[in-house]
Structures are given as C-alpha cells and as structure tokens.
Amino acid sequence: MRIPPSLKCHLLRTQPLLLPLLRANRSLSAARSELRWLTEHFRGRPHFSRRLAAACLARAHYAVPLQYILGSQPFGCGLDIRCRRGVLIPRWETEEWGIRLARHVRQAHEFFSGNEDSSSTSTFTVLDICTGSGCVALLMAQELVAVPGKTVAVSAFDVSPTAIALAKENLVRNAAHLPPSSSVCFKIADLFQYHIPMHTIADLVVANPPYISLEHYTSRAHTARSVRVHEPKLALVGGVEFYTAIFDIAWRAGAGAIVSELADEEQFLDICDALLDVYDNKFICGAMRDTAGNVRTIVAYRADRPEWAHMRDLFDVS
Image (cartoon, rainbow, N blue to C red; front, side, top):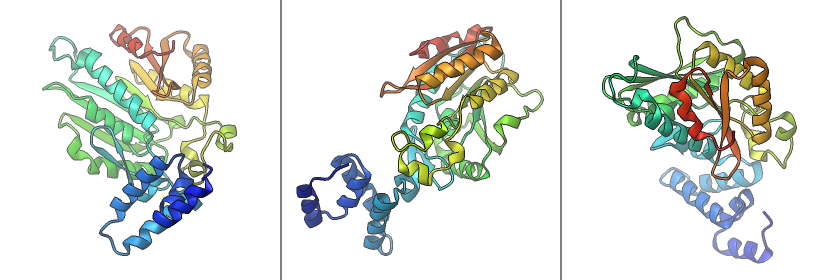
C-alpha cells in the first residue's frame, strides 16, 4: 500500500516497527495485529528486540509469510497447525469450507444419527487427497464425531515427503483436540499413481489439490509475492487433470461424495465439462461459495447413492 508521508513520519517517531509491517499489509489495523502477534511470539526469548526487528524486516523486504515466522496457524476449533517452509500454509477459505462440510455431514448423514438401524457399518471413512500440512484431515477428525460404538477413520496422502512429515507432527501436536472415536493416518502417495488397497472403501473424499494456472501463478495481479517466493510451487500449480484424478480415485474407492477446493467458477465449469465426458452424469455436481462470494469448492455426490442426496443442500451454484 502507498504510505502517506505524514503517516510515515509519525510511525518513525512513535512505532518504527509498524512501518515495515505496513508495507507488508493492506491496512494499519492489520499491521498492528501482526506487530502484536510477533511481539507475543518473541517475548521472553533471548535477544527479543533484535529478533522482533528482524522478523518485521523479513515481512517487509523478503515477503516471508507470517505463519512461517510464527511457526503455526490456528485452524478449526483449537487446532494449531505447525507451518514450515516447503509446505502450503492453511488458508481461511479451506478452514471455512472444511467446517461447513463436516458439520453438515455430521448433521445430515445417517451414519451420525445415533439410530442403530441407520447404517450397516461401524466406521465412517474419509480420504483426504493432497493433504499438505494435514489441516483438513485433522479438521475432519475433529468435527465428525461419531456416536458411541462407531468410529471415524481419516486416511490422508500427499506426494511430498516434507508435507507428510509435517502432517504427522501436526497429528501428534493436536492429538488432545481429537475425539477418541477418530483415527488419522498419513502416507506418501502420488495422486496420479494412487493404488487403492484391496477392500478399501471411502465414504467421503476431500481434497485441496494444486489449482492455480501457471499464467496466474506468475502474475503479480493474481498471486502474491510471498506465495510465489516462499510457498511450494508443487502445491500450487495445477489444473483440471488433478480433479479428474481425484474423481477417478473416489469412484474406484466407492465414495458417496467428494468435496474439493478449486480456484473459481470458471474452473468449476471446466471440471464439470471434463467429468461429463468421463462419468456421463454418474455424479451430481454443485459448488460452494466462500464468505467473500467466490466459488471455492466443487461438491459432488453419486447419483446412485440417495443417502448422499443431502449434499445438494451445500450447493450455492448448480
């Protein structure tokens, strides 16, 4: 943002560390919040003043993401997701659709009704594709609380060993926030070469694949410098091919529903066109918007699985 000379002079006299943070943010209030978080983070540590000043300068001059400096990002209800270079930082948009999805499924799906006759299985299985830091997998385990006598099993994978190592750390770090009826496991696997173990059945598939086009990735207007410079390109750049692979895995695993993050409404329509060519109306698809009004996820359920028809209630676009 452009900083008026009068404000710049005022900050230099009164709060000089706000000036570099203001360059890294869009508003003075956001810069003040960052300074407060950074101060709390470094308070009590050796060389407090030097570390705090270095962090503020790193934000301004090198666009280092705040989460990499603080080391974590709050997520869900009390989850604290550790963040590290080489792994995508959890976004508020992902947290938002994850909570909305999980709470809807918990309320609407027969497995969670408590009626003994409502489901023939004792385990509800979630498959999380392109898990990254593990934030979505842990959120599903946290929110999808099973009734007594039943369990929720979340299986997650990513092609990046760095991401899976961090996801396992986050599982240990957040174990106290997960219900005893849930289990989470992480493994390394390639989306495009994924082998489904024999007898594996997934009830729900969730995903946050790379979905930014190379053109948008290299554009300053579409992708922030901090993202391009510091976050892994592997987790960012992708297209429709990821979604056709996700739906292929979901189909082979017998999943009843799929929810995956995406870029925008145009990409949603492109994905629907690609799915129509392959599955010929075997999935009923819609999309959810985020609170900013942007199409953020594709939501789909199998046309031959009426127990999943409630997913239509999540459609903001159809």
